[in-house]
Picture 1 (cartoon, rainbow, N blue to C red):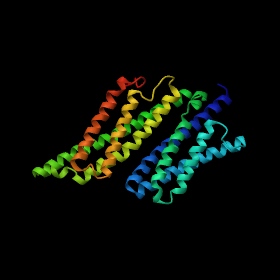
Picture 2 (spheres, one colour):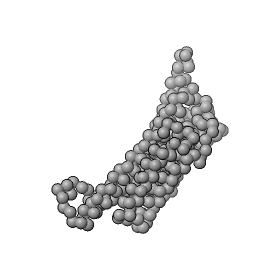
Picture 3 (spheres, rainbow, N blue to C red):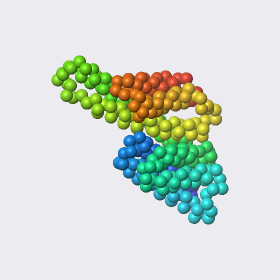
Length: 285
């Protein structure tokens, strides 16, 4: 490999790392936006804004460099226009960021922006033309699986809090004051634990699915959106989303909410260990 080829390789690798870094930062920002949307949490709002602003500045820098190098706006190819579209959505969300009144719109604008940034970063055209194709595919798959596992960890924590809730409730109901009782969390604490695990797990699982679908679209020649593993993963997302919706509406409380967490986590276990066996491409399971 010549000196110029090595420089091109390093430049492509650096650009790929920067794009991957932006996708991860944007994903974490979405988690905080989701928490802020549900709870109107100012700290989550501030963290989401800081991460989004960093992604925006990096993306603006990339677009500016492209304009300087090509002396034109990056809109004359699908690859470039997708990137610019994600940037415009981010720009609008930052303008609206000054008010909590638009939290619903800000969140969904950024969901859409994240999807388009992911399409640009891991698009089939870029993967096919990149000299570091194998590295991109491997790292992208690693990020997708990592986010999936993190979502399962969050749901697992919710399951533990649900079991503790039912245990503490039963002890209180039967008035059994054992020596270990003081070491258990309160019903309020376990309820907060269940809620927080859902707040975190849902957006992380959604991010993992977006990354996974884009990976399959870019890398695999023959795959289906109705692959068993993909369908069951969306079922998990739907179950937890429905749980959160009914809990927020006051229709799922106390013991019912705890049992819902336990049942939902059993579906997660089935999805994690069994669904892959019926998948056409999740063969590593």
